[in-house]
Amino acid sequence: MGEEQKLSVDEQLALAREQLENGRDFTVAVEEEFALLDPDTLSLDNRFEELQALAAGREVESHLVGELIASEAEVRTGRSESFVEAAARMGERREQLSALADELGVLLGASGTHPWSPWQAQRIIDTPHYRRNDELLRYVVWRNNTFGQHVHVGIRGADRAVEIASAMRNFLPELLALSASSPFVEDVNSGLHSARTQIFTRTFPRCGVPDAFADWREYEQFVRFLFRTGSVAEHTQLWWSVRVHLAFPTVEVRIADAQPDLAESRSLAALAFSLVARCARAIDEGEPVIWQPHRMIEENLWRAIRWGLSGEMIDLQSGDVRPTRAAVEELIEWVMPVAEELGAAPFLAVPEQNSAERQIARFEEGASLQEIYTELVKGSERVGG
Image (cartoon, rainbow, N blue to C red; front, side, top):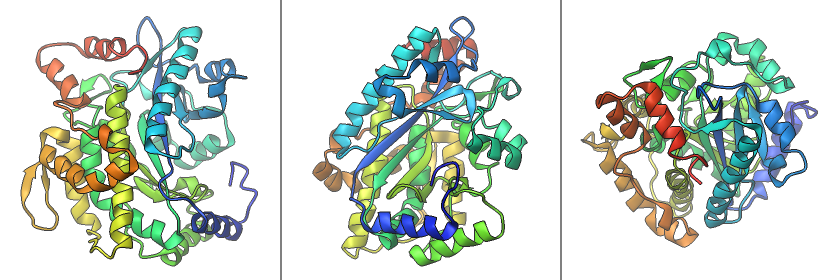
């Protein structure tokens, strides 16, 4: 199911279902996106192709990919058999990427948006996939100079994967709030904790919170509809914040901002991983899982975009409102038994301040965006490694 789309839609869907039916539970892979920066100005620098060429023949080569713009690089852990293994690889990939960046003479940034570099100055990388998206989306794709973290969790069973993804919708706001790292963009304080989410999920089609699907048949029918009507040309154009992947036997969680700090990135990935596993356990054991309506989840998603960890969340079952930090802590308590079984528990934590809160605090102290971003980049010269 690569860029050339060699398989028909029927073949793609049949293969995806077969892979899910024969998949393995709770393998994990993490993808992290980084900004490439000019070392003197810390502005975005269109040098991905040079970085990629430098990686040739090295261990990181097969784990380094382009992600839309030439001032961005993504590193992937690859499939790991446990979360402990994935967490170790996250550190290794960051170190490998940092070594390449040092050799090339660029710095790395790890936050959901760049504070000032204009989108007009960024070049879309020349691949068939991104050429197609450029032609399809135009301004929408040009504007999307954002950086995120994605977590793939292996799941066995096509119907089960769809049910898990539907259940995971409920928790996207809390994951976003924990991850928020993008208050500054276009040379202003946006007033948001995750400007990335507002830019990406509010502009791309088939993005953000998906509808709930009951089983593989219902999910497949919608995917077929999209292809038949010419709405999508490839399965990757389903950009939802949680999705059953059609190339890998995984549920992919895609809601999070990129993380400057490695420990916080691991903690965030651990929570996404543990939530998927906990939803699977609930479904397997017949524990009631309420699929909240899209309109209700969206209320909490806006709160996460606007106020991040500093705000409040609605308990969508009781209607009560409580601090977002408390909501995240409740989720950690809910997943903890499964997280302990799967080795993710030691990574679970809620920081005293997340990245957005730290950046906003410095702004309120009078620091400029240049000073704040310099501190963010220089404070983690090995992107948190």
